[in-house]
Image (cartoon, rainbow, N blue to C red; front, top):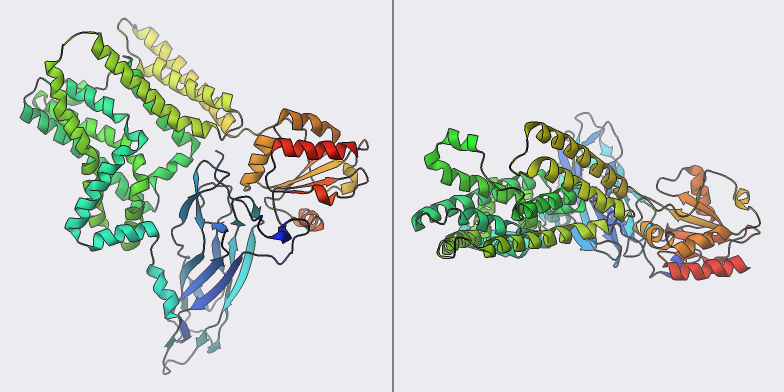
Length: 586
């Protein structure tokens, strides 16, 4: 899937024309917790990266796999062993080149690790060294990935000498929290009772998220069938329904916290969006009478008919909980971080459960009010019309989730046809149940449904990974620049990388434009892949002083660069066309 990549700085003049090779927006300092220490003892180290205002670096676990993660490495030594680095939680921000948020670091970022000296380490000064690898960006383009080396002085002294701790202010930040975590932490520190009330209200707020809406018709449909029961019976069923929601919510939230992940960011993945969309469309199909949500009769028989209502309500609550849970990330992000950092597993589980109860309260009221349906006419087209209204609303929710994802792929037609194939195969092959189907036909339709699903998966996968191909590019492979001078044509050199969002935007919106593609026939179009440049590609990057991507360099028919026409960052098709027309006329 196309993802949120972030791009670098137009606000410094060295980036335009001939950039300074020493220009950097990240500065690193390294600290040890001790000035002197005994052999065999442990210590801490802190790597502090200061990022210039207006810039950011990717987190150590970027959402998009093409992004370059921030990483700390320590040089190997027989004298000291380091534990894995501990990175802070990133900020999730929106940028102009993405419809999704990206996980980034900005300002001052502290990364911590621990070390332990060997028992036989020599006395005296022992240098600790390593490097910080990062990719710095702003909202328009990205620098090349870079590694800043650091050294940390540490002195090993005899055991009868006292040890000396230093940099205590730096290491006090090790237990720091993000702004979201600070707010959640402040709520919890006011007492369990206060936290329970607050998180119950947080749960209520979750009902304002769009992807919670699909469970409303499910709730109405399920409890409308129970409307002949007594009020106390309806309340018991509704309570089991809500407890099922809260239980799934707390379990998923707990797993999310312990895994250090947030369910909401699964929506950055195209296949997860497709899965959720197909589920919602299936619910819509049920509103149009394709099938009914029912608890399997075999399960009900084994549990006993007398408990069918309670068990059925609980299982329906579990199902609804699974549908709702991914929508919670925007509010639970602070609690997720706290559980992961502080290990408050029991309290965290309780708060997740209470939040789930808050989330389920409107459905409890909805279930109780469903008894009103018992006093309405039992027949008539108004009931059919209401179900279809819910079905239309569900289709709207599916489009709300799917269209933003589809806009990120180049082959949108293939993407939407693929989703239609997956949903169509599931519905026609397995979900749709009409009376009169014979056994043989059920087998045939199942096979055809599987084939349709596979075809949909193929189309969607191809669309997700499709790239514009309207221009016949020559990919740079260490040729001499003179070899690109063909048929007395000027040369366009496109320096790009897979981790560069503006490069993808330039490809999708500018180089895919039919007018630009037509004008490209007057040029020799050459692409230079800077994702992981080797030595020879690095020489070409150095020759043309490329500091950020994307960069487009124009060469005249004589093989000389036209400096005034160099493009740094994204340029729209109209502006690109003007430059190409001007150069083609020279």
